[in-house]
Every structure is written in structure tokens, then in C-alpha cells.
Image 1 (spheres, helix red, strand yellow):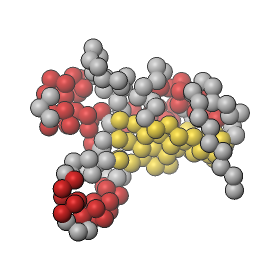
Image 2 (tube, one colour):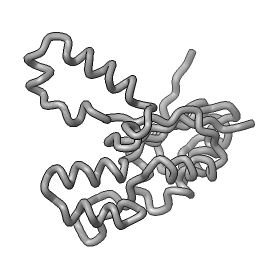
Image 3 (cartoon, one colour):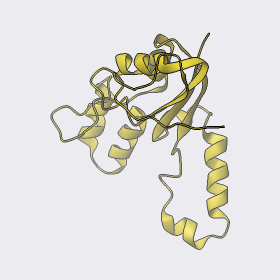
Length: 169
């Protein structure tokens, strides 16, 4: 088996249409100017039956994390902005996603959702000292993350949302 890794912009991937077996879009859709166009371009690069892996920032997690950190005004702004954007700040993200919005974007790109899960549900909240001082805690945390990854409402407040989607034939 040969693996050829190719990196490029969504509008110039350097891969002929329909020839990639797997395309990764991790941390991408939050920063591009046109997320639907970017994902459509990535979907076009994938062969029928091929996969697109999308990992994005979750709007609801951003709200909770800011509220917990005492940034109440920013938390409210994120709640009120459907795109999950903090316009007028130094925040580099143009958008954050929620589960329904991400699913819709993937489907509109001509992909079918095979798996939608949360990433960083509780692991981002557990202090390192807990893992360092409790034997077996790291393994238990990994098991908890895996068990919670697809369960709403835990999945819906994960730091990141992950979709594995397939291009239908």
C-alpha cells in the first residue's frame, strides 16, 4: 500500500477530482472565507466511497468555556451569534459549529455522515495533576471520552466536533 500525502488550498488541492481516498479538514472550516465552497471542493476530490474527515470548533463549548473563565460578555455574544463568531475581537475564528449546522454543511456538500462525535468532552476539563497523581486515571479518562463521544448532550458540548463523511457514489 502506498500513501501519498498532499497538502494544498481547497481551491487548488493538486489532486484530480474523485481520486483521493481520504481528505482531512481539521481546523479548516473555521478559518476559510467560504466554508460551504471549501467543503464542496474537498468532497469533489474524494473518490466515490472515499472519506472526508472534518474536525471543527464547537460553538456551545466555546460559550461554556468563556462563561467558566468569567468572560460572560463574550459567552453571551457567542450564544447570540449563529456563526459563533466574536466579531471585532482578535479571535482568529470566523465561525464555530453546532451539530445541526455541521451536519447540514456536510450533507449539502454531497457527503453522507457516517460518524459524528465530540472530541475533548471532558479531557479538556480535567486538570493534569489528576492524571499525574492517580494511577489508571489517563486510561479511565480515555475510556470516558470514547463512551461519551457520540452521546448527546455530551457530544454537543465537546470542545471540537468530528465528522467522518463518505462521498456517495
